[in-house]
Length: 147
Image 1 (cartoon, rainbow, N blue to C red):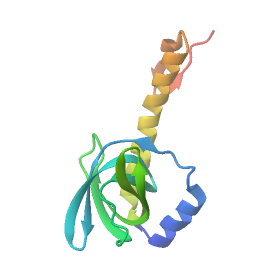
Image 2 (cartoon, rainbow, N blue to C red; image 1 turned 90 degrees about the horizontal axis):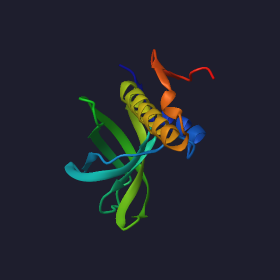
Image 3 (cartoon, helix red, strand yellow; image 1 turned 45 degrees about the vertical axis):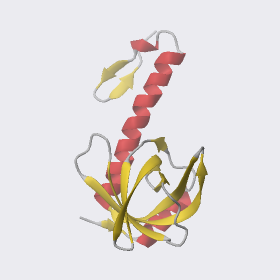
Image 4 (cartoon, rainbow, N blue to C red; image 1 turned 30 degrees about the vertical axis):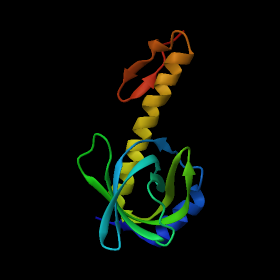
């Protein structure tokens, strides 16, 4: 299996920075820092990084991360770089940009996020438009009945 190099991830991030889809998700994220595992809870996730509730460690820039997406059985392993430490609401945490991961893990994250966004958008459509429950599912896409 291929692996995205740090240079490929940085190039992708330069193009997609702040425009990639982020979804709120609470995951237990294990980090390897100084050969010691530390656990944190994610706040949100994109294909290019995550925000992690944890005690900030600005003295460590590079981290190794391991987490499992809801509904998936394989763990995602990624190298990351701490981009900022700060507060999100009442919690301290860090923004971590992924710098390298296996291509299959990158694809898994992208597909998981898109599937979750589709569910969220359908729910919004149904709640905001009367009669939207007439959306018919066929072959994995939403088709709207003819008027």
